[in-house]
Image 1: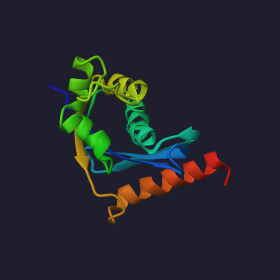
Image 2 (image 1 turned 60 degrees about the vertical axis):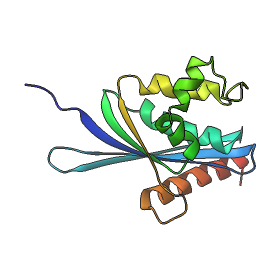
Image 3 (image 1 turned 30 degrees about the vertical axis):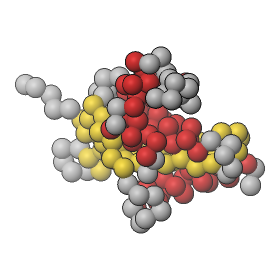
Length: 156
């Protein structure tokens, strides 16, 4: 009997108080089992000196690194930077060009992009962009988690 692949929804957002400055990410992982029972976990972490883009990437990494078996993961983010890196195949071009962008300059945040690719191994990813601060319930929750983590990192 063929095992069906587990489907997970990963909601994520990042925040930075200054760019760079104290920042954080917020991530929600949601899984619905065969009985229709919803399992959900929230994750967040703050960093004293970071950027918004780094936190947007870290939110996705944090969720993927929690998965312990191959999954189909629908990643929902308000970060066009993260979503377009995959949906517009920027990441493939960056790798092909030794982590250089179309402008021939080094790609920023290579360490996190590589970590994200490692965390993604074995999973099937689908990236969906949502407009931030537009009433999307889970995106708003992730934003609150991210900003609270940024505030903790700032000591406020």
